[in-house]
Amino acid sequence: MTVIIQSGVPRIQATGLLADGRFVGLMRSGFPLRLHYRLELWRSRSGWFDQFVSDWSWDAVARHDPLADDFVLLRSSGTVTRYGTPDDLERALEIPYRVNLKPKGTGNFYFVCHLEVTTLNDTDLEELTRWLKGDVSPAVSGGGNVGGALARGAQRLLVRIAGLPRLTLEARSETVARAEGN
Image 1 (cartoon, rainbow, N blue to C red):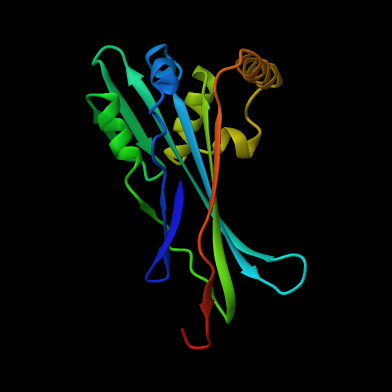
Image 2 (cartoon, rainbow, N blue to C red):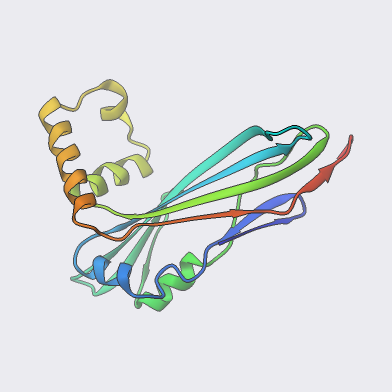
């Protein structure tokens, strides 16, 4: 994964996410993938600790549709795109993503991007799909029942115990100096 700054705007690109075939095999077995990105903006300081300025998060879900024998990519923007092969899906995942997160004020700044790729069970997928479409009412209102929440927690625990692959990547941009008036 790389974070490159072009014209003051960070561009995130993750490559080779499906290269070893583990995640493709899981998608074909019915386990969708969740790609959770978090881009952080930091101000460099001369002391021991840099200063966190702000962040931006977004998600994508990739899954295999066994009836159409293709791969579906659902992005945070709500767009749904189908790809005929795992290679086509991988090329789509490798397209650089521009985030309009810019430093304000003067100083030296850099970006750090975290990417977590995990498998989802059916309940996770349903909840995430609703959230990506803008429906947050069950989570906000507390409308879900306690039994359902416990069942979801147990399912998540079983998925983790099963040893399904999980990938965590992190990349940092170069430090850029921002002077007054830029």
